[in-house]
Image 1 (cartoon, rainbow, N blue to C red):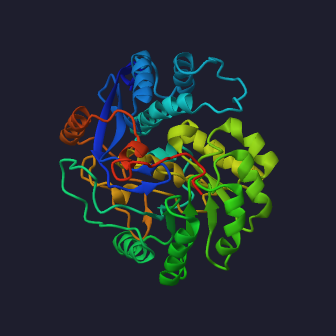
Image 2 (image 1 turned 60 degrees about the vertical axis):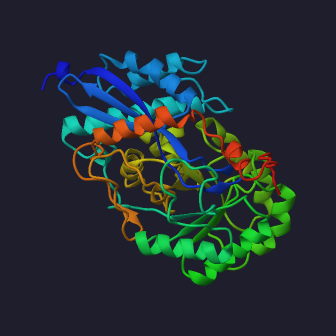
Image 3 (image 1 turned 180 degrees about the vertical axis):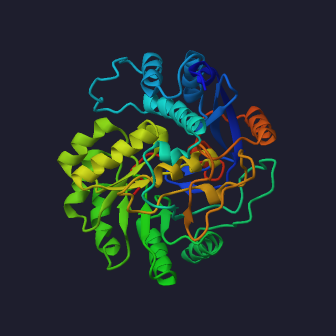
Length: 425
């Protein structure tokens, strides 16, 4: 095989929209359509590496600038990819500069969007699964968690597709019903509750109902920064009940506030909000603000960056897991490939996947069984595009009218005076 046949000849970015249930969170409620982008990087010999990223206008603008500059690159030259991204996104083209303390999410997200298809191509060229390109597996599969949400029975306005059959979940009993369906369907062995929706005492009642129904299951709660330090201090005795929580995720919204909570919290604090970039780690360690970081390759800079983060966490004794947003199977496959390579992935990972009905990969949705998912078999990511589905989901994007996620705007259809400002409690 000559080098010329594996050079990149095209890169394509296709925005898509797919059905999303009315899931509640501190910012409001999910809109009827979730946005993503599907990335294809093609080589001269016809191989196509796949990636998935956000679908908002800023991300799409960045990806559109980068895509034509990838023509001629070698998929194995990730440093060349980094140079292209750094030259077009952000304000510092120096790829060896110290990571900015304020973070660099836009740049890292753009890099991750193309790094995954580069790695997918590497696996295809070598005829190896992507996890082997990343150094090999230390476990056969990745554990995922049942991700519970308070939710409305249906969207306020007709989205043009049938209402989901999960029904309403606004009470402890309904949360337990939701969890039981999740666990019966997917075999999950741990449970996470998205919180910050109701007063903390109401949500703790939900946690206690879940603990009674599933006594042996690790349990987490994530208010998404919806509580103040004072509120967290006041309710900590309720949260600290023996055996209630595995960890408390983002009760407050800043790194400094997390450091304050850490001084009186008897349980680990986790985050995917305050430590979201390598430049945040020095202060995180200084303040002892976080004991578990939920990585996300989409904004940490890709799969190799996720491995680097796991090593840093191992160095400082910080736990590691993975964060999720509404996503498709390309994203889940990438999460799983990198997850099996992390020796210290000690917590089950988040995934919204059970909430998503649509899919863009051939063969339909990946199957989570017994709470775990193995990397799809085959070279690279092990998944390919269903081009009819891609065209349909792209048409959804063109038709839906949403170009930037706005949960608060959607919530005001239900509650006109809704204010997403945090802390809410």
